[in-house]
Length: 145
Image (cartoon, rainbow, N blue to C red; front, side, top):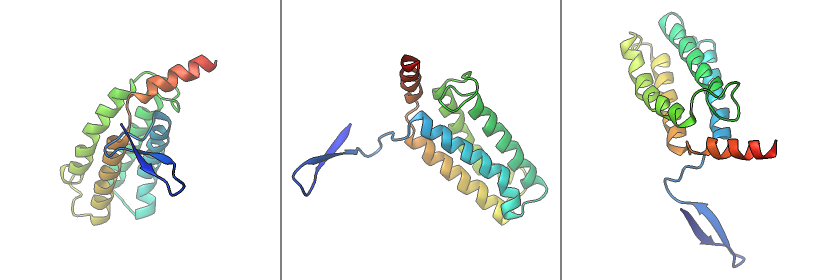
């Protein structure tokens, strides 16, 4: 669904409807690699040690692996369907929220807040992503070859 709004010059501009999935597979993939890098760098950037540091490195490795093997433009092997990738991320969000308490570092305020912020960021990406776009992108790229 696309909403049209009037321009000052008398024309119309197509604007995304509220709730529209505006991120395609390529943009989502770029964001996935940024998120993996943030988890890998967070212990150094924010001074996490011990359990929060280890958990950050594990989450970075898992997120990177998921990204590298998802069937979207920026992966090395297209083994995981992009819609399944989205379902995994839907599980990741509440897991990241719970991790500081489950892993015993909820009292480490910077680490806890980083995990909560990362969960919020990933939730926004999930809500804005068109998980069917990888199929269309793959067909277009295949047609060009």
